[in-house]
Length: 384
Image (cartoon, rainbow, N blue to C red; front, side, top):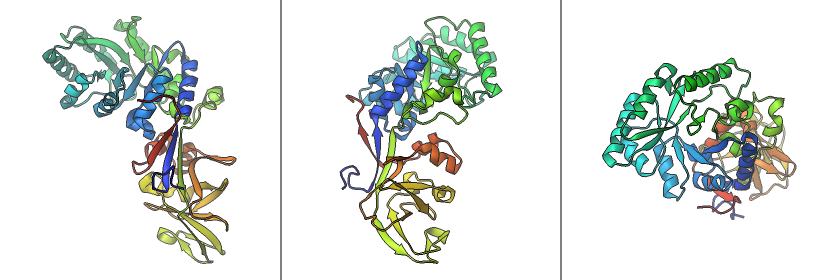
């Protein structure tokens, strides 16, 4: 009974074959552009080393991370493909970045000078960098007016080489948003004005939604994150894009086992605050998984369900830190499998369903499945 859970009655299963399939969907879509896989935040909660190994085997050309530490973890696991760090990092991290051959992103003169000095000190230049341009999201990146100066600073430095230039779209998951056209026009203008259209210069602008919605913005490669995990990149993608989105397969299932079953009586309240009160005699099951594991506390107040025995079962009352209570029928027993995310019988509960219930996005749901939940990886071919 505990074979999948490793001793705890709550676990996640990650289908690496689904990840490989999703890579294939995106590679076919964007060719001849390449796909780089975004594996930051522990591969969006799916387990970074197994996922990275699977996507490399499936033909991605590189990986993207948010932190130097994430890149170090990949290198220490034997991952040897190009790894791009998507924003400037503390100067204290530059040694690890260079030693592990991570590709830094730069967009300030301060970062360029510090990186150049460290490369020159180590005598390991020319060291490749990517320059990020802020075309309108106003998070990080160089202003379009500063691109020429920063490009010159990189090209005239003693230790750096400008190998790539990129931007990020603020509203790619809403293809009709006017910001998309404005940002892409700014990016194209900056490339042209600063001589950055050379064929050996990597250029990239699109995340998963952008890769699907904007063929002209695929450039040299696209940065695919959420699509590789089989989650819809955004509700704004229209019927025009359904043929792609519908081919994506969710990779993560969240499962548990029934821990306790009992009858309750009319007037009995359930869970903190007693916000659910039984109107009639019924049976309830306690499942040992809660908000400390990534189940949103408010899920029950917005129609949240689980699957037991192939039947949808309503969550009753507040999700607690370690447990939920669900409505069941007589015959459900301790040890029965519970599916919180995934398929059972003819039903499926997706991260997008939780997101819609709780007013967030699928990204937050899967990233929020905590480290208390052991990941069990299946399929995907040989792994490092």
